[in-house]
Amino acid sequence: MDKRPLGVFDSGVGGLTVVKEIIRVLPSEKIVYIGDTARVPWGTRGKKTVINFSQQLTRFLLQKKVKIVIVACHTASSLALPLLKRKTKTPVLGVIDPSVKEAISKSKTGRIGLIGTPATVKASAWGKALRRESSKVKVFAIPCPMLVPLVEEGLVNHQATRIFTSEYLGPLKKKRIDTLILGCTHYSLLQETIKKVMGDVFFVNPGKTTATALKKFLIKHKIQGNQQKPIHELYFTDLSYRALDDWKNFSGNLGHVRIKEVDLDNL
Amino acid sequence: MDKRPLGVFDSGVGGLTVVKEIIRVLPSEKIVYIGDTARVPWGTRGKKTVINFSQQLTRFLLQKKVKIVIVACHTASSLALPLLKRKTKTPVLGVIDPSVKEAISKSKTGRIGLIGTPATVKASAWGKALRRESSKVKVFAIPCPMLVPLVEEGLVNHQATRIFTSEYLGPLKKKRIDTLILGCTHYSLLQETIKKVMGDVFFVNPGKTTATALKKFLIKHKIQGNQQKPIHELYFTDLSYRALDDWKNFSGNLGHVRIKEVDLDNL
Image (cartoon, rainbow over all chains, first blue to last red; front, side):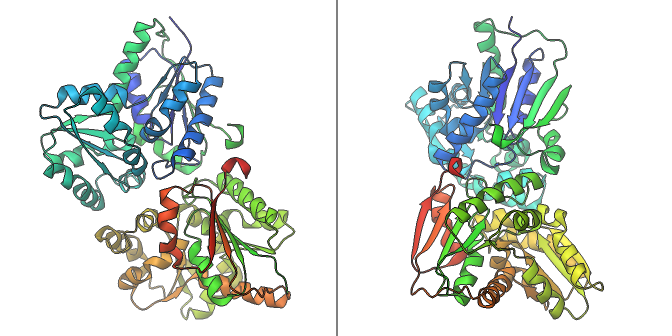
């Protein structure tokens, strides 16, 4: 047993979709989360910037004495994970590796689609990881820049969201994929809209696969927690109206939480 | 005569629409611009964050020995300008004051519309400045959160842009405004689309009014420059594909420019 908390970081509030899944499978773990709401989104930034921000948030979590760092942000998992793993003694888990095996095991045709931010698609970390696991796989990756701002504005059922979903996903439908990886924390909120365009494909939700992989990891290394009703700590770098209004849209009710602002200058 | 450059800062590339107007009326001035592409957009952040970022960029420009700091970002002009003016000996000019007089002089009915980012509208700096100038004025302010990401994606003529423009501007049309302030650097690129919804109203483009006010200020204080073909310096905090691909969409050709990345840690 290990009472230290799980550390989770994300570019903003989207990572709370991952936290929700973690709490579902690991209800006795305390979570310390930091979301970089002062600098979100990361999906349209360069590699250097994403690595820089990721290192700052990782340092913050390590100061909180977490037993593992979970990189909930797909852009950070794509661009910064190898470096974070190399530089950190504490285990670091991203959202890509746990999902690769699931995508390959579920796909019958080996034709796998990926939607993500421009930076995630550009980094091609998903494609490389999938092909490393299976040489037969064909990966079709599409950047969907407008979906993050639409979800952030709460416009999940807006006409414009349907228009962009058709526009982005249409080409994937033509490629006859049978499995689609939702490669950004925000996309799980759009699953129903995406399903209307894509029809009968298998959805890989990296929030879920990461939570399952995390549970296995904790059991394997015998570092599970056993807290009764843990009080989770949520930190944000900008705690103005936006984060305060938004966060529950991504996670639903997380039980007991403490919400605090952390100054960028202290990262 | 004063050879020191003009300093301009913005949250990203949008402020180059203001630079374009400045170069048009002041072709003999050298400009040092810094756009915070590593942390754009600012329009959905809190006051503390916007003030913090604005102070960093102002310090950077002062180190470049500029003779004046122009705050091209409307969110920063709304939230940080009073503090910057108080803390800086070098003159600081925002985009609000120069446009207030124009709006009031052009409006016949005193019914003035303002569109801006959520943070700009929330700050109500525009409303206060307009009412300070004329007690008879009625201000109708609407936040337009989706317009910035749409313009940033180059979707000026996209169906979704028309949908959101109608959605945001429709209520202003019902208020029978006769003057509309384009309260964000990105909106001047949408003027034609907005015109189709609003019909015959007078548009206040703060980029233009700020350039005119700046020229008057330089003449009044006898600090005009006289450079032949000045080489402008454009700094960005993230100089990945995004800023490099985008900036000319906002400014067109600016003549001779030098583009450099500046590390956030050095601000």
